[in-house]
Length: 317
Image (cartoon, rainbow, N blue to C red; front, side, top):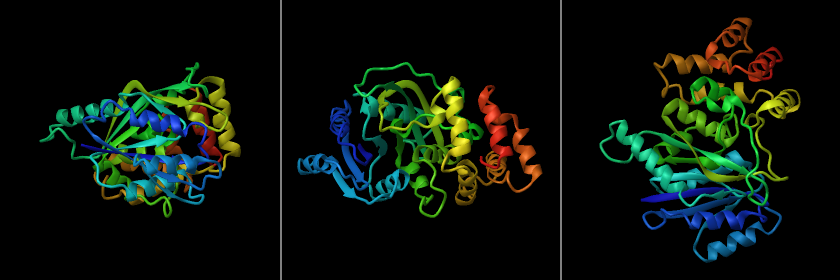
């Protein structure tokens, strides 16, 4: 079995070494060949010194970019990755639990058997998503309240809200091929993890594991998506992103791009096509706006519903 770990780095000297060690200490390493591929996006600190040292020890390979951005960087990693049974996105400042990869593979293979696959490996696109433990910079767990919207995993809510971060994602080669149908240089470059989950939500199966497998480090240099936060903090962040964010139409533009790229993949699935149409085309006319706002499948039951109405009203969804 081969597993490809895909890591995007940029000025990550403070925590990169600790993350790499957690990958090398995975308990599945005796049963699987683990390769680490890194895309360094023009680091100006000593990140490349760390990467060169590990590369000289034949523990990873890396290529250099120049401000390509995280989404495009991960897509480059997937495009150039060698053949593997599974792949995992990896953030430079986290730490993986030793059983992260073995648990993910077991979940995917078990789901494949339940789906009636002929072998233990799934032939269809499958994405494993685990829970995570939020810590401070020194890896001490801290109190963390998730936004209620994060509990949803259906198509509609997934088009509007973030869920678990990409550092918890493990996926098979069939999923990688679906990802690569989407070109973030041509189509809307949504956040890489939101985009990946939306794609498999439309074209394959997302497997949710409620057990943490990653220490998600929260530090000054890290920006959590506002959807990760619950309560008053989450509400403030959502409204700030709505009025002052750099991508005011990220959700609708992504939906339009997904509807175009995966039109053949979802042909005949009225629920998916309707959800994409309602989110992607709500700005076209009042009828589309009303259809979106009246669709109960987008409701969360908390302040997110007020945010949705306001975003639609302001043409910023």
